[in-house]
Length: 241
Image 1 (cartoon, rainbow, N blue to C red):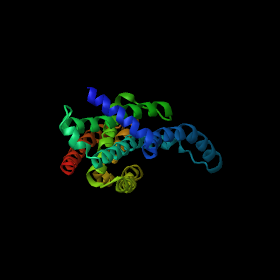
Image 2 (image 1 turned 90 degrees about the horizontal axis):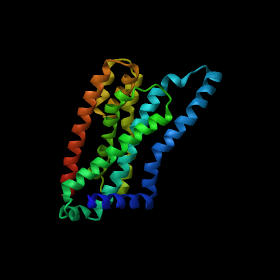
Image 3 (image 1 turned 180 degrees about the horizontal axis):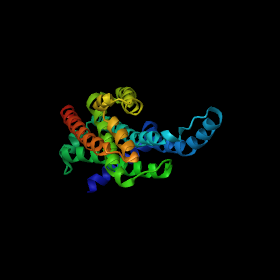
Image 4 (image 1 turned 135 degrees about the vertical axis):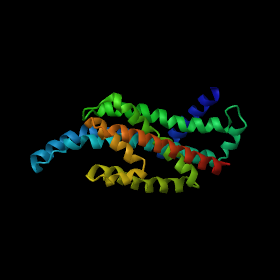
């Protein structure tokens, strides 16, 4: 327990002294603020001048908030992973009571826990659309699994923080998957399910619409996210060794 507390305090120090990590932490809060205070005036403007009501797309916008929160926390964790790997701290943790396995569990669990509670909080604060919070529990948990997924992607495939930054930017392309799922009416958009964010958005929207597809999207999405995290953990552990 003392070792975990020490790691947590070290993470706080790392975040405070690294501007990139601070941005990763603040980005979801800034996005939530823009949505809460920016979208309603924008809606009024578009209704008056273009007869276009964006309110019907609020649920999709909020699904992106649920996606962005664990993603940014995942990138923050991933950059910390890269620093600790470069400083050879993984070998140090392997011979401590925490052990390397304990370290991996810690690194995976922190973005999941933070992403879960922060996503719920931001959805509640933004409050642009009706939300069934009971149905949101598995959806937000699914989204929170993307935190360790992105962290392990950086840890497994980036050689340093510069490469990590490049990979994090390139990963933005996967957000085409939830966009395709939202815009395409044909069920062919299920092909976009090879990208985990697709399932979060679809489950979020299905929950709001009280659709029977909610259970399919949630179960399939949870399975895909868990398998992705396990595969990336194995890859990262092999590279760390």
